[in-house]
Image (cartoon, rainbow, N blue to C red):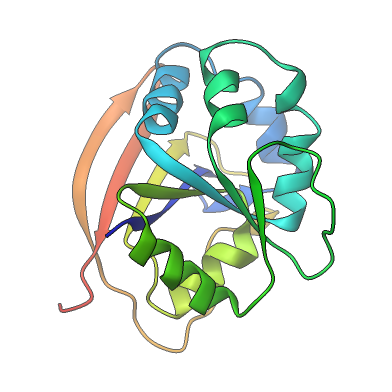
Length: 182
């Protein structure tokens, strides 16, 4: 059985999307890039929302290198009711109930199904206890505004710290595993 992993770049104040974080993160280099590469090489598939898919599909197919090669070759699942002809290779569009579709993917997979970006998708799956792991690259900056990673939930979602390490120039890489039975 596979597992659903949310992997995000986040500011100290929990901002995961928006221009200010993109400006701060810029191009991921050095040890942080190695962490992303290792994650991609160790994952079975990507699970993306429509907007993140379009962002990635507009950038990665034309790039070269080990990370680009991995993203371009791996299976990608996109949650969308309107995407008819995906341009990126190895894409399957999921049109049904997102919780049911993600649960089916977990049953069929043998490895990690990683969600990059796709904040709303991640929130929905977290709300319905489908997320098995969070991998957070914490950037040492307070942005003060932008899209927070987590929204309100109807109940507490317990996770336990599984690993932590400093990456590069002061980034914290934290891995949390679901503690549903806690």
